[in-house]
Image (cartoon, rainbow, N blue to C red; front, side, top):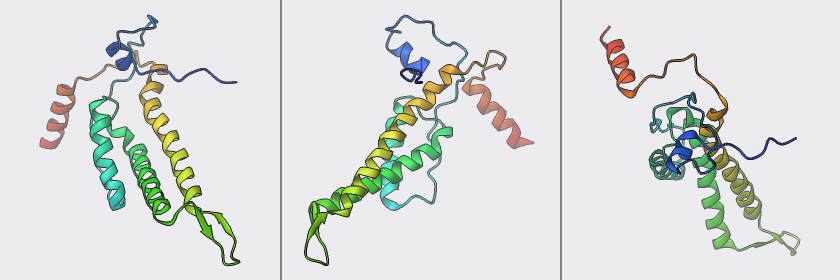
Length: 158
């Protein structure tokens, strides 16, 4: 049984003027926007993708340090998809087998798998903030960015 469409993050609903006029989750966890550190394990093509997507996702207000792993996976899959598309352009859609017959290029399967993963991860990046709408944190006091920064500065001086 499906639960219907994934909820939009409260911040996006507010920006749009709450078009559905449904009650907003005012107790949704608020994490500070941040561009997480790029993992050193990313391949060079994935690093280029990371830099571009991190800025776009940060500007959209959906990137926090929690999304580091998801963004890393998305960057690697995107780089794989781009490489497969380049190889398809170079070698064509069909490949000649050792027996002299033709078969679909193996790069088609690689491209399709990477694209399917990209689409799943993109939904996940949209869903990660959305899933926060189902979490209530009424008992937790939300810290402002200033409080977080002062807390971190205090911890370093100890």
